[in-house]
Length: 162
Figure 1 (cartoon, rainbow, N blue to C red):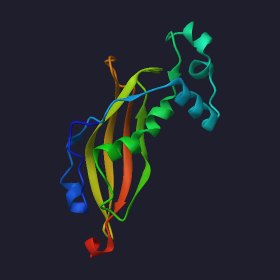
Figure 2: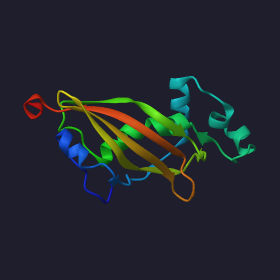
Figure 3: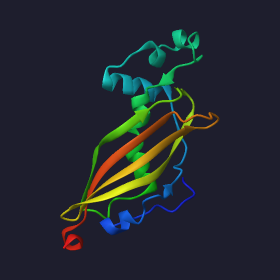
């Protein structure tokens, strides 16, 4: 559970008004070995640092670590914790301008995300492109485990766009 109100924009103008605003943080979400193993199975990335408990215990981090891309993949769900997009006809993940993984995410850790809306560009027909700086932090670790600049596209309901 988060300690903030979930924003519910419904128009491009309401999105534009959010530029510069920090959202969050989300609730804390634990990372289990089962989640790591499932992500490895889905992506085919079975590198030992993620899935071999014995070898990882003797490795550089003393334990297995979550895939950086697994953390990044949580971004859309975490954004939904911060800002509901059900007021729009639809929203789409459009891409990322920059992604970095400054620190590993150890198994058993808890992660949450903060986001800052950095740009909203109307693109016509009641649609807009929104850029958000996403910061994924782990409890007890000073550096973020992921920093990403995400891009989404949102389209108003037809009656709003007219």
